Structures are given as structure tokens and as C-alpha cells.
Image (tube, rainbow, N blue to C red; front, side, top):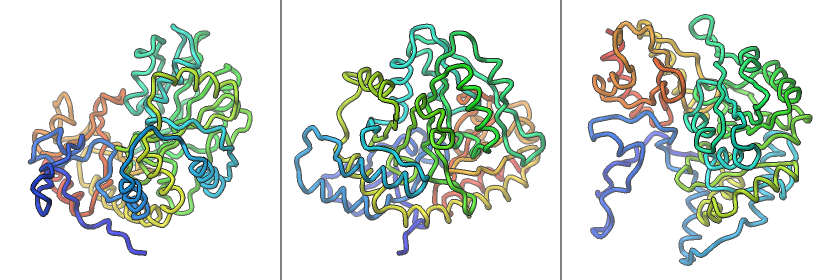
Length: 398
């Protein structure tokens, strides 16, 4: 089946060809934060129409016309079990699943449920910005360890186990982990994960493993192995977070799942969630089931598109003096090191400079704990990506 990843979809102004009583646009964080002249390559939201199977399922649910409080259907739980077994070789159980309105709420709920006020919540930087706010927002102590930067341009970022262990104190209880890693795109090597697992057990930590990008591994033949599956000794102390939001471009339907094998951890997590999170999004649950049941052909086609975009981006960055990129091994996000850019010398914020001088919006590395970097979202059409890269050329090639 052919899928269209080439035709740009208008997301800013939607009036053409629509009934007169429809809105002129549907506000989008990605496309409406900045002015009409800015090309947005920032928040992790793709510009592709979601899989046909998902759209079909949503239309059928909307036609029903009643949107009362829903329940997580058994069929969705079984579908996720089948997806996990088929794609990761990990046999999970339906009752391990806690469906939630997103991964970010799950991070905060885990801190509230599994730690006490003042306990340490540890993560590595750079990292997806909400990770850095969890401890403060929940009355815990933030703890961070820096990853090891590439030793040469183009080489990967690495987990610095010595730095991670040095950040652990007697109050450290929770590790917020990202696997694959956002923003660097790393697919962690087995030796890195083995070292992490040993450290977690020795220090008696609980792990929240955000595996949101695990279905978009870009290297041919690569296969994701969940942390709790790769190291069975971690299963009873790990909460694995999955969602169809990145893989199938369903972020606005706010549906995710925490897979928690240990009944005690699961009970504590569920107890805290009551009253702090709403019941399931009835449309999001429908979309999730359709995506996991029938969306894999679309995902495979998407991966081919993203691989091509990654090649184009790597080639383009090589032309920008002083800018380096470790090619992402997963997802549709690229982590640009702009600290030595000749064109941006003296700029306090490379992201702001590119917004003002090129009219391209990237995510600011300072928000990820690493100033001087920027995250670029290449999950868009080739036409839109090329237009943005041409603008960046005008600034960074000079």
C-alpha cells in the first residue's frame, strides 16, 4: 500500500475548501507559536497524516456520536501485548498496563508514588525538558549527570557511568531514563545498559524508562529491546512508558501506557493517579488500538522517509562550518552542536539567532540542560525540510 509522505499538509490556515461555519484554523503548538513567516522544526510533532487505519477507526467512533466516560478495552490491552511480543520479544500481561493521558504526567506520577519529599530524582543531560522539572514540581531533589560528548565530530554521545554514579547520593531513589534517547537519538549499546543495570541494582533505584521513540529505529535491521526485558533483574523495579504518539503522529490524542510488571509498584502508581489524571481519552484509546493493530505498514514506510531525511540532513550539516551532528540512530530529531559555528560566533542563544536571522524555529538546547545546542525536527515533508534547510544555509554556510 502506498502512503503519502510527500504532500505538505496545511496546519496553520485551514479555510480553503472547508464549510463556512468551520474554524479558519485549528491551533497547533508547532505551527502557531511563531509567525506565518517562520518554518517550525521544533516540537516533536510530525507533519504527516496519521495512518489510514487510525483515521478509519476514529471516523467510526465519531459517527457513534456519544463521548461519555470510557474504559480501556480488553482488546487494546491484548493488542499492546501482541505488539510487544512481536516487535520486542517481550511477553507482557494485560494487567501490567496502566493507560494514561501522556508520558509527561506519568513521569510526575512516578515521582509522587515511588519517592518521598526530599528524595533524589536523577536523570542524565541533555534530556527532554520535562525530565528536568519533575523533581522540583513534586517536592523532590533534582539530580543530574552529564552524558559523555562525542570525542570527534560524527561520533555518538555516550553514557558516562562514572558521572552518573557520582551524582547518586543516599537520598537518590528514582532514575528517569530515556531509551532511545531524546534529544541525541542514541540507541544505547548493550554495554552501556549493562553498566546502568548494575548501578541501578547496587543503589536500589527505581527506574522510569521512557521508551516513546522505540518504534522509530533508523538503522536497517535494528530492533528495540525494552530495558526491563533486556535485564530481567530490573523488571520488578522498572516502569516502562510507551505511547503511539511519536510513532503514528497521535500526540494530540494524549494516550500513553505505563507497563509495570511488579504488583506493588503498580498499586502505588495507580493509587496516586486517582484524582490526578482523567479517565481515558475515548478517541485516543481507539486510535492507539488501531495503530498497534494495523499501523505497521505505515510505520515501515515512514521509516524509509525518515532515513532519507536523515541522509539529507547529515550531508547539509557537513557544509556548515563549526556545526556538528551525531547522526541520530532513532526517531525524527537531530541534535545540532552550534557552539563552534563560525556564523553564530558571539550569539548568546544559537536557537534565537536562527529564529531571527533564518526564520526557522528549532528547540533551544538550554531547555535540555545543554546551552549552545539546538534540536531539529526532520519529521516533515521533503519540500518543507528543504525549504527550512535552505534558510539555515543562508546563515550557517557563511
